[in-house]
Length: 337
Image (cartoon, rainbow, N blue to C red):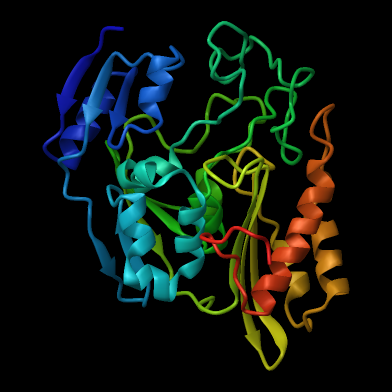
């Protein structure tokens, strides 16, 4: 594969290089793009290296949150004392994902831009609407054990692979981007897309835009949180179902609740109505069962992934129970509490 290489000296240079070539791609840690290029899934005409950009800081914001540079490694983010103390849900989710070696290389911004791990997407010899719009989705009637049960379309039933993004969805992070038209901020709920009729678009970034930072708003989930990840093996594996929960418990009742699911949709899955129905309730099995059922309303099973619906329901109940009791899931001892 032939491609040109540009090492950007500034964010503006990176934006210009992207805008000048519709087939250009950014590279930082390269933990996903290099795989895509090896499998002939991605064939960029130009690779724009942004590893030299000054986007590796974690800074306090005036509002009591944190601003995380796009090039902060997953490892540095997970082990930062401010993250572990103020956003332990995020630290836990990162440590549940990938391997130590990959976390050392992978970047914060790159994590948001991961492509799906669908078998068919990664096999350039078969049709895939994400690679070649209009060619079809063989996963719909094929081997679809790992595929989505929520927010699907006839065009695509792939799932988003990130663990970190599930926690960022629950924490209501804000994505800061810069493009040829200037800077803008994207609420995390609006960053990733459901497939609908354009599954080739995973997110709402324009081609010439680059992620510069992730803003974490002030958070009060320091004690009552958990990240529960269910997978085929306890070591490096993508989630079949994952649940990020953050609760604020006041006087024995739930004052605020945030829930996000991974492994079940084309993007981290939230439902504000379900979160609202938990608020003011005293934690109990019945309350959590009702929330889990509502969270999975409209789930659609395929031939091989029907097990995901009851698995997700039980995982939501378990995660809410863990968070309410302030007994978060350990990512070192992976036995489910």
